[in-house]
Image (cartoon, rainbow, N blue to C red):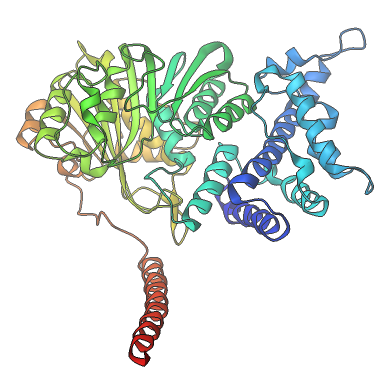
Length: 516
């Protein structure tokens, strides 16, 4: 994403939300879908127009461009009447709500994979409100890159969830984190699985990886996802369709259900699961082959997720996922599970990521990478640890990401470790030359260290990168002090106000009793 435009896009989204709050009878849950439908049309048109000249240049009067020509470019065909630019320009007297509903029907008719997943009911919206939404969303595609549709969806929902006091440890995975995972996994072709797929952003970045390497993701990748929230499944399907991907996305609870028969079935597993989930009914999991190392005694789901990712891999499969830092050092039964996983030889790379990379939470995380194909190679007995907590791009006071150069540099360290050719198209040559002047992997103090299984055992089977790289101590809660102070003051003010209201109620109640 062009991060400089992030604040502008978020402001646009909330202008739309305010418009709907003030001028419609819909609840936030009800107007989420119409908004996302319009955002979808905006991005579909943008991708369509991006290759239209190229496709039409190859057509002729005898052989005009077809829907299939666009599908071959992994792009949806967007009929004239489904384009936001057309809808924005309709005469003032037209029935705009009917026109948008007709636009949805037309794009579904042209692209059968969209059947029954796009929102409808635009005639229920007040006409001035709908016109304002069209005006707000038409320029969106020029303002964000990356998995912009997924970001908008997740950001929109997370803000409403925060307003309603909800949240279950689930949050949108930032584009640069997903891009880094993909660059290290290298999903050139095969079956890709995400058992906590949300809006499908991991799949989108896999497709973009294949495109960057000059191939067609539709031919090279098959994607399979599971998502617990029923309302999110259509959004994931919309996101896949928007990027020319067809996938098998199922609604299911991945703790208890396995709709894709995942054990040993996938070449790549990617995920950002909810962290530290408790109250999982582990008695229902006894004997499940997705948990081959055993069930943790702790009331925490982290090692249930980690085992699912491990168990889903084919004999040459790779996994990359986001995990809470605590999982790398957790003790007792979780330590035993981690020891078994390390002894299997599948743990390949561990990367520590600093705080403030996520849009709605500040926590630092660790990226885990498993590789079953390294058994029988010189890497079988080793793990690469990278401490990237000091590598970041400061977007604003409260948000960070990685630049393309930084992503390429971190992926380059892994490629050197694996004995692969590095890529330098994003400008990482200087960083690589500075740290690896001979063009070969070496341990770099404070950055990276290859540890043997014996060294890991000596560290109590810890997978915390900072223990191995010799890094300077980094505060795990490292945040911008002013931002943190502001947040704390806001919370203090809110609690003080609530206390004042409560005190007044108590005083009134007591006074009423005394007066009686």
